[in-house]
Length: 459
Image 1 (cartoon, rainbow, N blue to C red):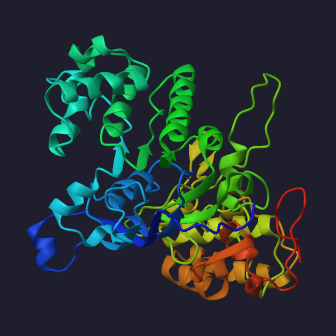
Image 2 (image 1 turned 180 degrees about the vertical axis):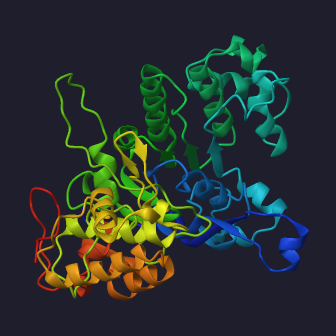
């Protein structure tokens, strides 16, 4: 697929959404306010008639991104530019910057910009009939009233696969799939141009998911809609999306066409997510990539590449001869040491048979054995310099001087993944990956890509 020539219908530039983590008077007075960085500098474009999938683990910022774009929550920083198409009533405006609009102007703009929520039941007033739920946007924007309003409600119900008799029922009388159809009908009531679908099928059975996805595709073709489809299920995103953005900890890690993202080269995070997709074969034994550690807190995201704390392909320090696998083990040791307050917190393996031993009573040899076992370090590294530096760190641990051990670790062992924020590197006309593995500046030799795995060639 060649580079697009048409103008995007929506552009997002540097969008951020931070949530205050503490509301205490004393914390605010002393300037100790902490911020959850749910969305932290996101850029992308949406083109007319396409579906852009946004995918990632729970808590990566997908839903916050969608809500901040259309100001269901106010963004902290950044711009969202909407270019109304010729058929829009706002077509006389070449481009509208949404984050700077007044509340009343933004409400008017919602005729073009709609939202489908993850849980259709919680987004509906249980005391209102389905007819009134679908008709509410018509009332707010003064689109129709009386018999015309009723006729429009019946028409919308039939468009989404329901019938006019459902208009007099209440939300609790419907199944989850039917309620989602009602939510879709409500979003279509104002004849929008763009719809953000926030996990619209995640709470539904698989068979119902397929029906809703097919409905969304049919509606897109019939009404020339543009979708931003937010989900955590990569197989669902692959089915419906033209392009895909992979989010991790508030940032876009990879962006490209569906074919680009689902085939090598991959961002290491995307590769791990894709390896977890099951195959419809009872004999299938997938080569799953298990990520070490846990997702860091968005209160204090890691420096450099935010994925480096879990990445199985993190770049080793240039000053040592270390395999990627061994460097991952060393880095796990370093990360554990950074947050440890005691020797016990570093060496989790304290048991000797049925007897629990205190690491502070162990000698140096025993502590070293515990460390190597805990972090799966080899008995001896090929590079003697690694052994020398590791010996110095073990010496400090034996003396229970964790601060000295941590300082020495940070001074000696450092990867560019820990210190330098990756830029999005083009791997083709329609594909970008924010990873140092694909940036020539971080390679000791020529950049190569293994045709089978997508991994950069070994030095």
